Image 1 (cartoon, rainbow, N blue to C red):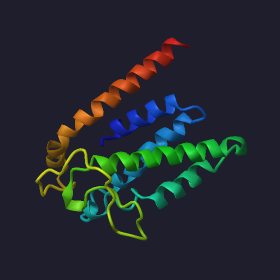
Image 2 (image 1 turned 30 degrees about the vertical axis):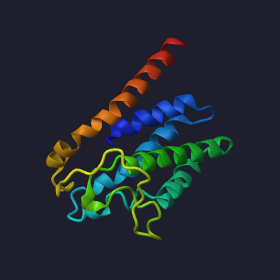
Image 3 (image 1 turned 45 degrees about the vertical axis):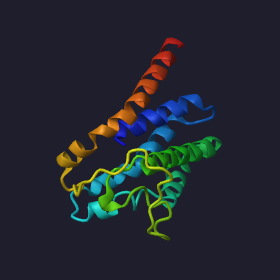
Image 4 (image 1 turned 90 degrees about the horizontal axis):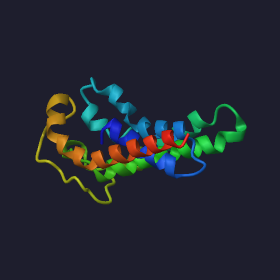
Length: 166
């Protein structure tokens, strides 16, 4: 899923759930894709959805980022970051189309290299394209936008409704 898709899902859920720290669920929802900073690395396709798409990463970054600052709201920040990160992992596990690095996410990495995908809604495209060819990869996965557009709409509608109620 694209960053805009992850943002939209996190925003919509954050607005529907009481006691969620909105900025934290948004950061948590985007943080696992920080591994895209490693895109220029020749081995990126082998590590994408592994180093940062696992429970340990989500847990440690939630505590590391949310544990700072005002102690009164620490738990809300940590739990919101964690919910956003777990939502990211679940969505990526269900919408993975790139069989060249394993379908799903390496949920238990570094303890287990297996990939987790409870259901693959997108199916896998018969492609050997990797993220080393980003333009070709985007051409291959553009049909996934069909799964994202409803979340764009929900997030935009929620945002507009919140602005009107102010």
